[in-house]
Image (cartoon, rainbow, N blue to C red; front, side, top):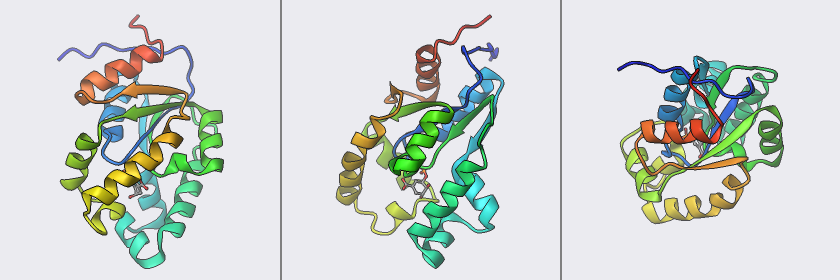
Length: 179
Ligand code: S3P
């Protein structure tokens, strides 16, 4: 495959937001490749900074402690340019975090159907909110409840397709050109 570089009109970070399993990491990596930018995953930052897995943080210290660690990891990115950031699915829900993200970069909601999110989380790790009950109906209720907050992102992109298709959609919404 020939990688065609793309350029977007500004160097502010692109923050991918959305529900667990919406494809933020896969799409984020593709976007970072296309734009020649760094790729950052806030879940990875939290794990690095705290020295323990997300499951362990939830189990040993609780969700509130995870949210604190997540907020601190995010703030460590202040002023970063030229990057694509996949954010944890709960990060955009806090008022402070939402304002911070919107101020620091371009927020893009990957709006994937519930079935796709469920399929991806069922086969992966690092999601204690799913693993606690593995209850699809409770998970769907959380999915529906969060949509109103995700809709506050600057840009919404249909993420029903493959990561490649979704990355292409994001690039066109960001006004990317291939010089
Ligand atoms: C969470 C999503 C997860 C991770 C944590 C909490 C959430 O990240 O941050 O398990 O509250 O939606 P992904 O969205 O990358 O799965």
